[in-house]
Length: 128
Image 1 (cartoon, rainbow, N blue to C red):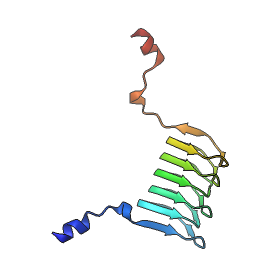
Image 2 (cartoon, helix red, strand yellow; image 1 turned 60 degrees about the horizontal axis):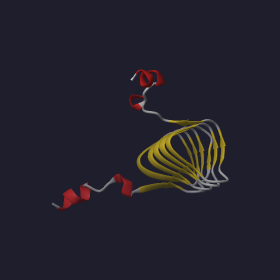
Image 3 (cartoon, rainbow, N blue to C red; image 1 turned 60 degrees about the vertical axis):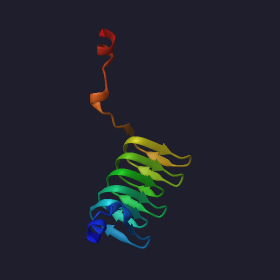
Image 4 (tube, rainbow, N blue to C red; image 1 turned 90 degrees about the vertical axis):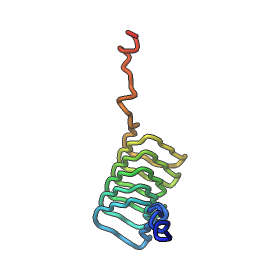
């Protein structure tokens, strides 16, 4: 009975961290939350990513949520992207929801994800 409760804990309760004095070379896959305060040279595929002010990513990011305070040199593809004033992104951002605070620096294209099943062409609307 007690083991059942213990095993039902969500992986989102655990946060992996890469400290400011750490450099990781290689891809990272994480089903929970990870905070990067150091340097990662590789692609990231995570559920929730926080890039601290000292954090740097040299690679592409695929996530559900991305919160950027540091630097990203690569593309971001996520449902929710939040850029703080200290954020520097050099790459494209593909998003459902995007929040950009004054002072954030972006060099790249911003693309909103669209669900084509919800889109009706203008020609079909005019005929209806």
